[in-house]
Length: 435
Image (cartoon, rainbow, N blue to C red):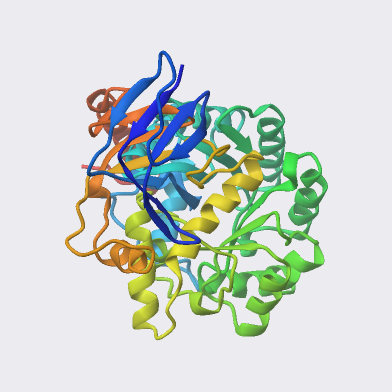
């Protein structure tokens, strides 16, 4: 028994295509596509006349714990060459997370992703006070929502060598048992906070990660390069290359503070380059040279809400303002290519054999929507307010804007309890009352 989605307008990003056609979904896959598909006996028939259907979107870099940063006061900037306040605050929130907070962060940020049409998240996590089992808790939170996820623990020496080794062990353990809608990867935190011993540990553990996938935060802020030089004797890029960690299986995010020779070296390795425009803007760290990222550019939401339609618009507008436009249709399609590689199945194409991850948009464009005009509609008209229903792995997770697998009111209540506990811990750590 399957489902036949009738009468929708199918939209694909690269190559850009806009076509009125039906889809038949069975056992989590798209099994047929055509102008007038005949339902099979027992099929559910769903009319989507007047709706757009796009592939489920992919965030190539996401930090779930950042959902609890919202509304917290920024710390005062102290010390020699301090990290940006927003970065310091994110680190503080991560230190304040317990196991329950990890799971609630995933569920709450995952619900936002679902409501925005994002169906796959490549998420990097850290919780120094609750390392063991934290990626399982993260997966449980995303599972509650119904998302697909690639999860890693950010390996750094920020909380000491013991925590660094625990982080590697946690990533390897999770990757070894992840299945279904989840996969594991190794995470590399800011290179200024990671020793050469840590890099060697990551290199040694990479063979234990199926697919050898690596999520790297690189040159997000200028202080990272200065710290890397001062503490470890070389630039972040040089250290990654020396450790032989960059290649086609690596997802490298931010890349704000790289000169052209360094960026060209990263591009030459074949790594995916993930741009997180809103996250960089909010942290005040600068604008990545996305006009030079090349063909393997993707988009990530970083510390911001996992709204990839908004991310594409901001990335486009900011790049145009900088005089170096970026192809956001390709960047969105590359997110699907990244997910397809790690899961080993086609994700993104609205075609036979692909995984049935798709988004139904209630949107009637005021001007003609064609393959030639799709880019303009994406950056000037489409938004998450048009997301009506979302299917992941052949199952409806959002229908008529209503989540089907959890109670949003109950989740919001849990999240506020966790947020209050985090604020209390931060206040205690700073010696204030929190009043």
